[in-house]
Image (cartoon, rainbow, N blue to C red; front, side, top):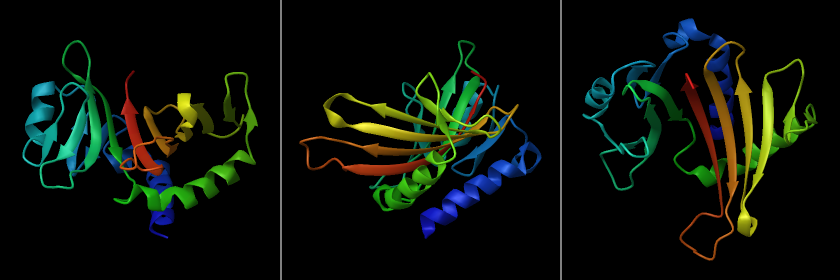
Length: 182
C-alpha cells in the first residue's frame, strides 16, 4: 500500500508541472533545493550538513547510519556546474515494492507496443518501458514517465539480480525522479 501511495504521489508531482516544483530545472534532493547550473562548490556546500557526496559517482548519501541511504545523485559538466540530479522515492525496504511495481509494469505493457529500439511505447502518451538483460541472468525492467518539453523524468526500475552471493538482494524496486540538461 505504501508503494502504491509513492507511485501515485510521484505521478501527481509530475502532473503538477514546473511551477509547483520550483521550476523545471529545480529539484529538492534530501530536503535541499538544487537547480541545474548551480556551481559544484555551492551544491556541495548546501548538501554537506546532512549528506556525504561521492564526487566520483555523484551519490548523495546520508551521514547518519548505519544503515546509510542514498537519497539521490548529482553530476557536473566540464565547467563544474550541476547538469544532472536525481532523487529517490522508493521505500526504505526496496524489496517490498516489487509486487506493485510488477503489477504496474504488467498493466502498462498492455497499452504499449514494441518499437525497433526495444523500448515499448505509445504514440499519444509519455510512457516508455525498457527491458535490459544482463549477463548471468540478471535483468532490469524500467518504466519511464516523461513530461513533454521538460527535463524531468520519473523512472520505476525493477532489478532481478542472479548472484551466488546471499548478501545481495534478489529483487529490488526503485522509483527515481531525474532532472537533466544532458
